[in-house]
Amino acid sequence: MNAAAVGLLAGLLLGVAGAAGGFIGFLVALVLGAVGFLVGGQLDGDVDLSSLVRKRDRD
Image 1 (tube, one colour):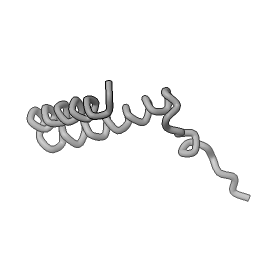
Image 2: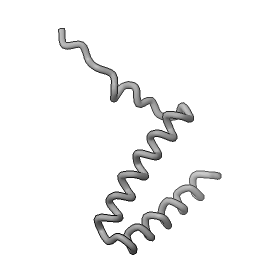
Image 3: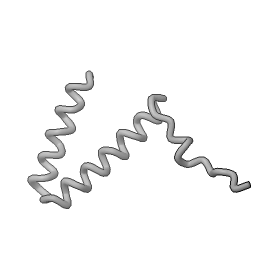
């Protein structure tokens, strides 16, 4: 599935969430979609989330 098809599918799903749940439903769907994108990117190796969860030294 190419990026245009994924974008179309995501847009349709967000449209349904907005119609069914109003603005709050749209925001929840948007946040969950972003989290799913980041987790999927991490599993595919396209996104590196280790820099976000790694603790910094405070020396």
